[in-house]
Image (cartoon, rainbow, N blue to C red; front, side, top):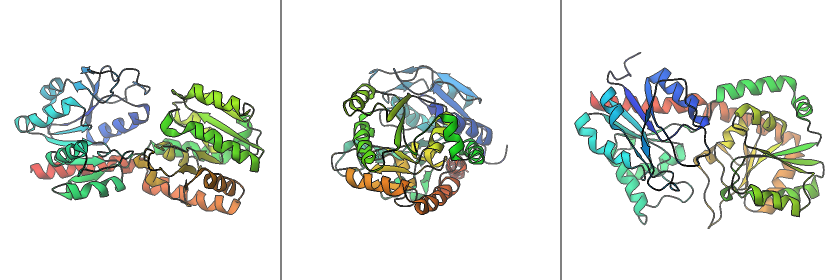
Length: 390
């Protein structure tokens, strides 16, 4: 396999397998020989797919003492430890994952290197080790681990001042399996946007898209208010909402109260990226007033800019993927609902701006957040800890 592969193997502990991570775990196995160790049950009522990737996977027992806290879990790490005697362990990191503390304790006995993988900090509430016990605990974890694998360059910059050795912090750009999405996009480009709209039965001149969980953090109800204001400027427009979640009932009620039943369509959850990708390609903008996540990458793969609101003082911050949204280049971050409406109307009626942003979006998905960048981050961290063991 090559020198970077430790003879004793590499294990990756993960609570569950989200559908958008399957290709990640498969690529890690094919390229680096990483064996996925995943919980048998996963958190209760989890909305993510439990389908496993086509690679070597070990199912381990997992126990959730409080079902409403999906990160609070103990995973049985002993079975894969004894079976594989790994030289490197990568583990999904949260200060609530109880079995991680055991992985840290057992390091000198089993003589493996430990890499923690997650955003590490909570981007939605900030990072303040000076005042937050949880953040101080995160700092302790970083310094106890052999390497840290975070989601974004901005995240790495925030973490560096708090670690004993900045070289131990690596970035695995959080992204989707872009090769397949971009190939599908290229096929759609050959058809052309108007043909794709006809295939989907979209008759409006302009189309807006929301994709994601229907939760309060996404400000889904505010989306409807924004849409209503846009209609007053651009009447021939339609809103397409892809996703499901606890806010669905309130969303339907809001649409009914404002008389927008003929202007807004709810499609439910579409977990297959290509199904929603066709909708994204046919749309002019993706609109997510609240917290954005991997929907940014998904939208960019289909040439669609993203517009959102900047977090207020009491609002949760954005996920790490917000760094892909460059204001005025790949999307818009508005200060208010009014400015958000102005930006949306200005964009969909400005062909010159659309052409410019299309080029910037293409550059972003091919150079900054392609799938290989994510896998390279894992490889770099493994090479680093292997060097420490030589």
